[in-house]
Image (cartoon, rainbow, N blue to C red):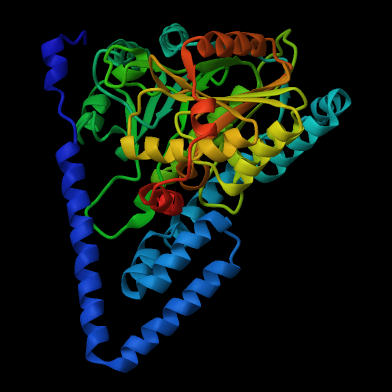
Length: 512
């Protein structure tokens, strides 16, 4: 079970499989586009019909409910390149390709939702404290079935290494079940001790389950990972397996990070179970990540999120009552509201939470995010906050993990700093934490980046914290991190215009 460096190096990943799938998909798209073009060239009637279809689709997109930032690139692509644009829209647009999965998850949620009832005394207590926050809580319960809870212990970890050590100690105490859901798992040094604990617990009769995203983990593990885990008694499933066919639900990934122990202790945050998150390797300098530990009744919301995704893959559904139950109260102040976000409904829950917190801010808003590719709504709210005198500070990476996305991120600085927002880059390396802190009272921690992929394409999760004692630790960590950052506000305040490349990249950023 204790893997040597040589043995760890022998664990194969699926990069070749990903490469094969990507090439296969590209070739299929090119082939279909070629066939359509040939057909169009044969007959002017077909060509005219395609132009009409392109205009109709563009009008339907314009009239639809989707974000205007997403509408524009689709409309331009379809009208300028009718064959390619229509083909890509029909294949890639999530609203057209996720119907079956949407219905499946809705059926699962019908079983889960009755077990997540809002305690009215808790909501009333929050309303007395802060009517605006109670409105946010009511929104999350109504549209994301996420109750708000009191009397939970919440611990903040300012680095992923401390979080994972606490997580391992909690795993050792498991008596009934362990649920772990992660975007990326690397079967290497960081995961080896976790695997050892999980295998030991499985032998004791604990129900141990691992759920991971295929694309997120494809550079770390191969398809035999499931078999190897099952041999240890660890039930394992993979979300949305990548296959070389035209199935473009693959554009929607599971980006959640959740661990639940016995329905009483839960962990979430920005970190995956891979070496770079714990600075065992340094592909992008020092990796900065954070997380929280929850103990109490709020953990049942994390349990529900896990069961939703676990049961979405296969039809052998669990008896939900075995896992969703209230736990004893703790003598803790504040309120916590774990919630999930899904690309399969009409709600942009993650973005709406961020927007509401920004609107509420009176004194300051502190944000950490690996990507800053904001919607028009987000840019406007951040700018308005700064203009009305709120201290808005944003920390982004100093060393990028994706150079093209980093370039797009920096292209958003200028408009924000001109409105009074301050931008800092984390010079030691890569900032991966996803947090908002505001006015010493409210904060969020979870998996949701400030970019279109997180806000519109991925399954995500987060937690809203209000007057929890751990918020003080989050403020201290932000201020300490700020001392390691470079203030680039002035640099972008006086920068002239954007290059054509930046303009094109920003135009199509919502579709990436």
